Structure formats: C-alpha cells, structure tokens
Image: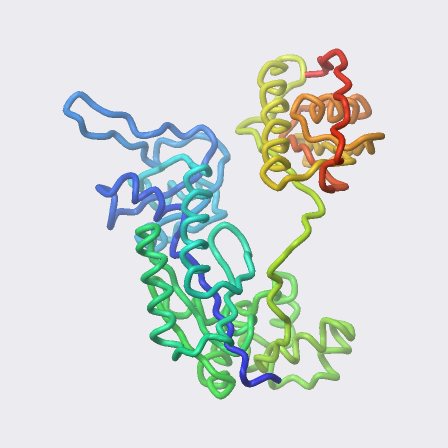
Length: 382
C-alpha cells in the first residue's frame, strides 16, 4: 500500500434538490421532492407568490430523482415511486427535474475544485474523486478551501472524505453528511469502517449483501473476519479476493482523469404505456426528441457515431434492442433519426410501449472532410 496517497471523494449534498432551492429559496427547511415527468412547475399567483405542486396530488408512476434532507427524514428517498412517497409525506413540495440547471451547476462546482486541486476523476453530475497527494497543505484546511470554492461558485454545500484511497474516500464522504469533512487513515478502519453495514462498501449490491447475510455477515468488520479462502470459495477468485481486500480498506486503483466514451444514449420511460396506433404523435415526438438529444451529446463531445441503435421496453417488461452499423459516421439529429427508424422497422410493434431509447456507439472524431448527408424520406413508423 502507498501510504503517501491522499485521495478525496467530494459528493454534493442532495444536489438536484439543492439546485432547486437556489431557484426557490422560500422552500428551504421544507420537505421537497424532485421527480416525475409531468409535474407542473410552480405557478405565479395574483399576489406574486408561487403555488407549488404537492406530493399528494401526483398521479402516475414516476420515481423520485432526489429529495431534501427534511423529506428524507420522513422516509422519502431517491428511487422510490412518487405514489408510495405520497403516502409517507403527502404535504411535501413536488418539483419537476431541471437537468439543464443541474448540468450548469455541475460544471460550476467542478471548475471551482479544479482551480484548487486539478487532478480530478469525474464520477457523475454530482461527485468527483480528487488526488491531493501532490499538494503541500494539511488535509483539513485544504478540504475547507475546496468547500469554500464550491460554495462561492455555486452557493451549494458538499461533503468531502479524505483517505489513502478511492474505496475509503467514497465511504468517508457519506459519514458526516451534509456539509461534512471526514479524514481517515488506514489506522481508522477498525473503529470507523468496520462497524458500518457491508453495503456501505461501493460494489456490494443487494444480491451480494444477501449472500453475505446468509453467511452471518452484516457489517464490514464481520466481513473482515472471514478468511479470504472462504470468500474465494463462495464468490470466486476475483470477487472473493476483492471482498477480502475491501473489508480491510485496501484499494490501489488510480484516478482515471480521461475517459473515452464508448457510447451515448438517451431514453424515456412514459407515464403510461403508449399504443403505436393511438399514441403515434406522442411516440413520434419522443423519438425525434431523443435523437436530437443524442445529437447534442455527440456535438458536445466532438464525436461522430458509426452505429445507431434503439431500445424498446414493452408493457410486459420485455425489452428489445436493434443496432445499425453505418457506412459513414454521422452526428446529425435527422440522420440519427433515419438510422434509428431503420432499426425500428426490424421490431414487431404489436404491444404497448413503456420505454423508448436511442443509442449512438462506435464513437470517433469527425473525419477531416465532412461526408455529405444522405437525406432520405422520413420514416413514419411513429
């Protein structure tokens, strides 16, 4: 183990909800839920005040994207169905997701961190790893300086865990939320990590946790007490050895500061299952919109795609995918829709559609000489 490594994990606090509170500060300290597809935005009333939707009024099968800590105290968490959440917190404010705003705030906080500590692994819209090993500053003042930079750029708080590696840093950032700083060494593993539930280790999912529970293992400490040979016997060589090392806080993974995307995709789950005949206009609008969003993603990354694919999930939850590899790469929204339409022709559309997705793969830089766009008649499958 490299004892000189100093890795931070920074996690924004209730990120989507916190961004919404920047727009609606009057909702601070209230239970607020963000989610659903067709949630009305706040309506300005005659006296200038805003009328917000309430969770009790929601009808549909949307899920919670995020919730404020006040809503979480009522048992309402991300991933929960909104109808179920309404039973627990009927008076909670319900806001629609605003992903353009979330992406903007994500760029702000990451740029602020990079101004202090530039070696960053981007893990998503609201979290990053930071390599602090080469910075000659004590961990606590450095963490405070990073948090101050994030707040100055975004008005938002974050939680930071600083440890010798990524595995421990991910756990540590969650220990003192919200607005926390947690600094751990390998010597702290028995006292701070071993009492935690085994699920706190990033990579132990529900199925693995259930298998561990059947072995009498509920905590990280109990996992650490299991012989490596026993874990290998039950989980296989790779996973068993990883579990043994993870329970001891051992992780030598480097930060990945550059990633080559293999694909970009966009998909939409509908509030109700759509019929190809009766809901043709809605399906066509969604299909075109998904293709446009994929094109925007490609343009933002400066890439073109050699393969276009689609994904359909039907009302019975069966899922079908189709791909088309093209003679020339493309990135134009209309060309993507044409290629995706060719894929669509290869699927029997006899059942109602629950989910629709469009994917671009085989990504590469655009050719030096742009290829002419072959415009064909628009496909009218839906």
